[in-house]
Every structure is written in C-alpha cells, then in structure tokens.
Length: 125
Image 1 (cartoon, one colour):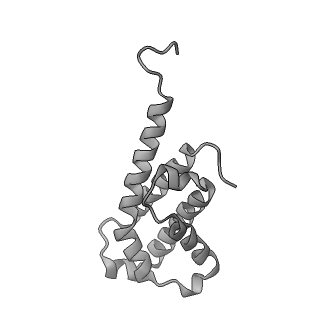
Image 2: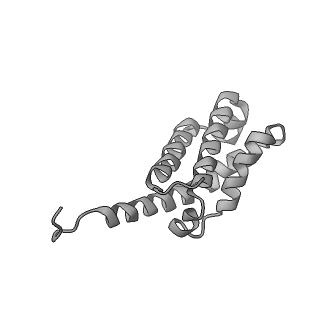
C-alpha cells in the first residue's frame, strides 16, 4: 500500500543506496563477484530499495520522472522469488550504472518536498 508521505520512503532509498556504496567501496567487479557477504548485503539493500519503490506507488513517477520504477519494483520480486537465477554481474552493473541516477532523483525529490513544507520568510510559523 502506498504511503501518504513519500519523505521517509525517499530517505530509505537514499539510506540503502549509501549502504551499498559503502559496501562496494574499493571493490572492482572481480572483487565483488568473489565476496559472497558483500553480494548478499547489496542484494538485501536492493530489495529494500525495491520495497520503498513499491510503497511509493504512483508518487514515485510523479516525484522522480524518468526513473525506471517498474524495473526497480521488479528486481525486488526477482531477488525474493528468483534468488537462484540472480546473475551477480547484473547486480554489479545495477550498482555501477543505476543507483547514481536514482540517488540523484531521490535527493532532488526530497529537497523539493522539504522546500514546499518549509515556511517562507513571510510565514507566521
């Protein structure tokens, strides 16, 4: 069920992207492929990102146009139910190519939401 407040979900997206970045810091593709713990941790955080995308519902497309939300939602389903068919090279490429645009879009959306809620200089708040 989509949340009415997208801010915590966008924050979850950003938190999980930051964790993934921390986990893969200093690794190249070969190192990632050889490190089962890191691969497992990255996959779990991608699942969380996918779940946040599901909970954002149609707001995701409105807040962050141009992001492949159906793919983000779908990868979580694959990680949950098709875990035995996961190609770690696809996960690596996802981390290397897809997380940065999502991170930027989520940051911009979060900033715009905060700007809307922030009282202006002429506000009585």
